Figure 1 (cartoon, helix red, strand yellow):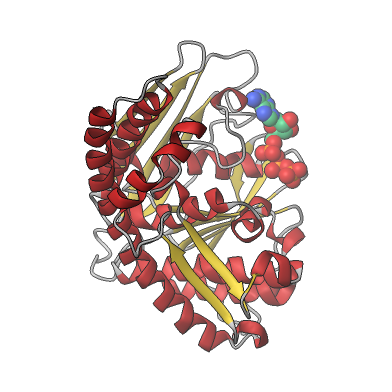
Figure 2 (cartoon, protein in one colour; figure 1 turned 180 degrees about the horizontal axis):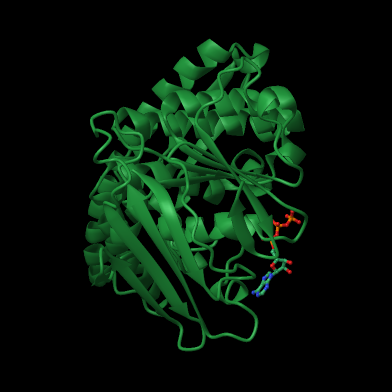
Length: 376
Ligand SMILES: Nc1ncnc2c1ncn2[C@@H]1O[C@H](COP(=O)(O)OP(=O)(O)OP(=O)(O)O)[C@@H](O)[C@H]1O
């Protein structure tokens, strides 16, 4: 499926404009501060339920307003089995609205209110490539967990609810750990529930990671970047799995009690990236790290595409981060995968640079000015 319509109210500087997006490539250009990133950010809200550039909803509501809304319309996208008649019909309507004073979020799918964010996000797998994405390699484990869990969420339907249950149990377990006199029998109850949910999360992550790794290795063989020999990607579940998590928890009781929170389990998981035995973040040049992240993102797209899901990629400001060759590689791979893609640039995009082989896909070009999107 692809996002073909969007409507916003009180979202940053965006001005409502009736445009239709392509299920393939959308090229947005406009001066600094015109609103390009805000358009991508609004799209991101429908697929992620949050901004990909700031942590607080308050930042995106138009200055002086209390509530913002984003509506999106999805059609069948590039699915081959949909004839011309089917294409163009909206198959899902998504909406997210946030009152930043009352701190209330309202979510809608096809006109019905839904409670969980996953009910909204499941329809629009949105993957962002912006200057912040390089933290997947350079940043801490949390960035890599977020990277992996995005795919796990779209691959394993049970993941989101298991994750939520596990977070609740973790918080209760932490409270018990912080109690002055530790109630060992109560701890055992939390341990059991926590270990059970953690093992389930681990299974979902390990299965998705295996798919991802296969896709990544196939991709690396094709693109033939010189430095991938000796590169190792390994999933670390968050505890030493030569023991059961239950055993690990019991044997580290004193350590966890001193720290006052859970130290082992899925909240400590990571994707370990090593080159010739050393962490990539310490070994690779900045350029190599960027290429690695781009390849990892494409590999994720491959995993979802194998499952028949069309990913919507948001490429913000990639001209500043990637050279011409990498941009062209990214564009042609995403085209081959049948992804929907939004690309921003300050200058009118040079289509011939993105597809130097002359095989540009169907695309739509938009100019952004003072928050208004106009198709050219
Ligand atoms: N909450 C808000 N309310 C109103 N306007 C806002 C709000 N937040 C940001 N703006 C303004 O919206 C404009 C759009 O910003 P945005 O980051 O989307 O621009 P951009 O086209 O991506 O710019 P650049 O090319 O510099 O990255 C900016 O001029 C900014 O000052």
